Length: 122
Image (spheres, one colour):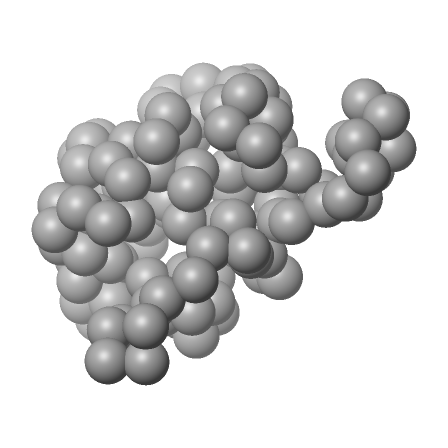
């Protein structure tokens, strides 16, 4: 059974941490799953977001998991998050997509929805 974790909650939300906890559990059990960051969930891929030393950094936790981390390109661009390629394409001065995350189109989400057994939105 494959699972899609559709993450739409901001990384400052406890719900986003629940999504990560489930991803960790699925990963440790070697269960088949995919993630997709959409809406405010794309903020986790912002490499310029700062966290105090006494708080866990959700972006780094996802990076340590070592899985594919697709992020909706339209949602990311609308929230000021871009990679080098899109920064150049849209004449933006800087790029800030965190390492390990990749900008993808909604076709990837459609494919994930069609190929999974269950979808959990956080």
